[in-house]
View (spheres, rainbow, N blue to C red):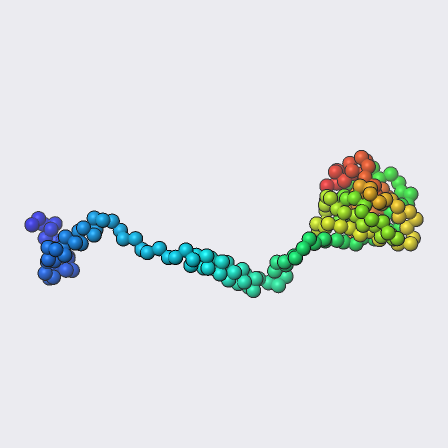
Length: 191
């Protein structure tokens, strides 16, 4: 025996055990040479039950552990978000030309959008929004025109309109109304 073999034999924890019988040693060598044994496969049915159950449990835990103000809501059908604005009495008033300050005035608005007037009834106009420039995204805007508004038809039925508002009031003096190349240019410059 070499010096290395002597040192290894001294470290062997099984050095006091008797050697294995030849048949048992051959069986162990054959099993080792055959490669690793594979564990039995779980039935696929367990995956179809376990995965969805785990997902439901995770979703329930996320819902219950999230703060109430950020919990998702589940919509059952198509939803429409809408806001209501009021047309101010200066919306149709004679104003100085807006070309010099239109971009600044529009930039100060809290709501700006374009859309199509879908309905005009009494003192209310319904606009289907197709582009939101500023403000919370909405699908529809209702514009109320109080009695003191001289000409509430600046938003005629079927027209494509541009509307800007601040603090719930539609900006007048040519900053809101039926779309025109000039008015669209003001909106493009501001947003």
